[in-house]
Image (tube, rainbow, N blue to C red; front, side, top):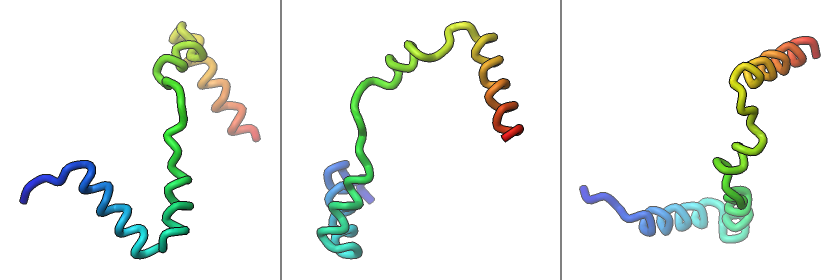
Length: 69
């Protein structure tokens, strides 16, 4: 069995969705999956704590807050 191209897989997936959901609900379903924008890897460098000890302390503190709530 030969591997399908991504375009073939995409078309078959859309066809299957249309068959089961119909064209309107297929469009609504596809709207759920928005890839968004930006570069997560670069952006997380800006907000992620650089010091591992501080990061770990923040995670532990957050966990303690959740268990109290």
